[in-house]
Length: 278
Image 1 (tube, rainbow, N blue to C red):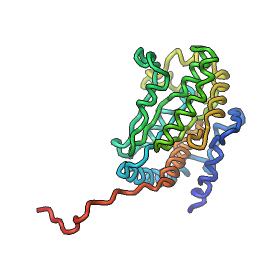
Image 2 (cartoon, one colour):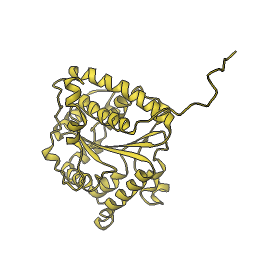
Image 3 (spheres, rainbow, N blue to C red):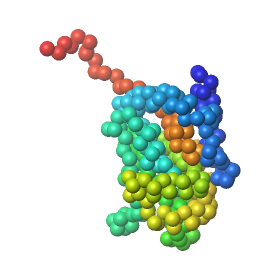
Image 4 (tube, one colour):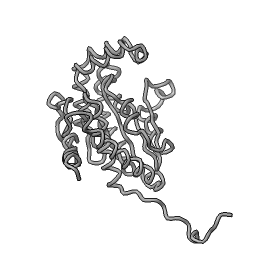
């Protein structure tokens, strides 16, 4: 192991994991943190080393077809969910990855319980599923905007824990990442979208309304992270002001999880050694 590999080990990454039963204080977590790396250039080699491992592990995981893996991404606007998917998963076999973006529910979805559309999107064996936003919106935006009463949304933490327990018991490994950015960094990213004609399509005036509710969202996130980080479905609070470190930390956790599963290629059919294709 290189010194950087030792520092970016499971023990170092464990600091981002929300231990079950603990209370999260997001104001005490530094979104500018970059671990052992001072600059992006020094992290680039480690990122590519991890990418090589991830591509090989995902190929084995897909062929193994014994377990599934669910990655949940949550963040404030501009937090980097799209960028995380693009950069962390670059190079893996797209046949083995499914991405689901949860927008405002449709009329059909509203006619069912709030977890119905989420359960349908859970990954099958051999696949890595990625939720770009997720069932947690029902204790975040629903809570902040008072879309239902507290007596309704407050019960959903237990629903969510039970739902994730069901997925885990059925063979799904669950990793949940909150991409932690500062309010100041969000302002910079929103302004960058406005200033770049090619990015302006991503900007909405509604983003400014949501931004004014920052403190309410932080309180909602702290409750969700504190109440729904479990041994079978842990939350990680990833420092995300520096996009390159965000990608590196998440890729490291993902590689560690796949290595722990130790997927193997299936045994080939017997009697293949003497076959010659003419």
